[in-house]
Each structure stands twice: as C-alpha cells, then as structure tokens.
Image (tube, rainbow, N blue to C red; front, side, top):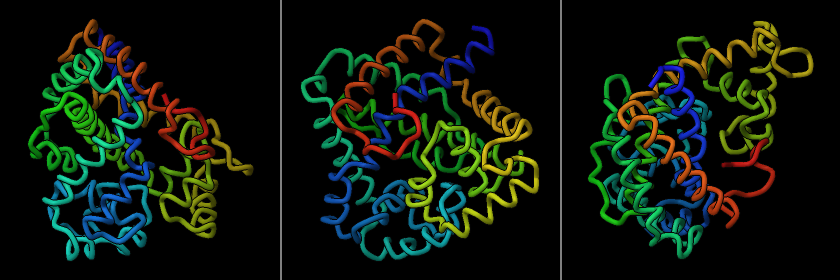
Length: 289
C-alpha cells in the first residue's frame, strides 16, 4: 500500500468508526451510571472515566492529555473524582455504559456478523499501535480486553482513537497551537463543533474565546470575520497531514483490503447509530459518519 493511500485510509477509518466510540459522551446512560457509581452529575464522569486508565492523576495531566479543554474546567472535577470512585471501578462502569449505549443505538445489529467482523478487524488494527510518545493510548492499552464482540469493537476503536489523538496533540504542539487555538481553528474549518457547543463542552468563556481569536488574528491565522486565512488553512491542513501520517500503522498492518472492509463496516454501523439518535442536534457543523 502506498503511504499516501494509507494516510487517506487512516483518516477515513477514523471518521466512520469514531461515532461508535464518542456516542457514549452524549448518552444519558453515561451520566446515569457514573452518578450511580458515586460521581457528581455532569462533566466529572467524562473526565474521570476517560482518564481512569492513567490512575488517580492530577488535573494537569488530564488537561495536558485531553488538550483542548479549559484547565479550569478539568480542575473542578479532577482530582476530586478519585475521592468518590476509584479509577479501577470507573473503567468497569465505562464498559457498562458502552454496552448500554451500543445496545440502544444498534438494536438487533448488536448480535450481527457485521459487528463481529468489524470487531475482529478493529482489534487487529489496534494491535499494530505502539505506546511510544502516546501517554493516553499507552495507559488505555493496559486495560484488559472485554469479551463480547460489540465491546471488543468499542474498545478497539477507543484504542485507535487515543492513539490518533496523542499523535494529533503532538502535531498541534509542533505547529504552535494551544488547546484553545486548536479548538478555535478546528471550529473555523466547519468540520467540528459549532462555536457555541465548543465553548460549552470545553469550558471556555466568550471572553476567553474572543481573546484566543484575537491572538490567532494577530498571527495571521484568522481573518477579521473569524474565518481561516490562507495561512490558517495551510496550518490546519499541515496538522491533519501530520496526524494522518502518525496514524498509519494500524492501516498498514491490516492492508488495503481489510482496511477498506473495516471502513465499509464502520460506515454502516455508525450511520445506524447516528440515525438512532447518537448525537444531539446543533452540536456539530457537519453530520457524524
């Protein structure tokens, strides 16, 4: 497989598989189960459950590895979460959440041969990931694998997502974008969150968002309307190219035929999940999957 083909496939697989993972962040089952386990309602469940494989780390570690969240928002929940529920318990509850969400969104498909096939392919792809320089992936990779095919699929996608995410943060840092700058410029591409949702979910105030936008305008990345300049467009494309280049190992391990099959299966399953209401309206600028 040519390296350019591998980069393109890595991006396409990520785009169609990610909704099957990220649906848990918008599902009512998550808050219900994390609250029942002992956490406080709201964002605490997200920060604590996703960072739990790293252990009872501090707010600085979570903010660094999650990157585009306001560190002050993270600090409202971490490390307090660890006084309420242990990381080990949260890892287990998170699998319970994934199970409940996928069963609701996929219905009878949950027992289908397509889910089992996708799980096998995704697990093989995740097996090609390495922990070097990827802290959140490395911690998550130490979590024992589940048994049920739909949870194997979800966990494999989780590993692929954190592997890609760690590489993406490295690209952002290397290109001089802060967490807030990364969020603002991604929103400006029209492919991520709408601005209101980005501010609300990542904890940035209008004033902080405005100040960040002013810095990007001064750097020539945004124009007066808040749109990307030619320089800004090139910056975002360079970051995406570097992210894709750093994420090719799983695709190369599968080979073109299996990677394309995984993309096909992921697209079908994610479309079913989105059609079943995986994501709220008016959050993303473009539809998921």
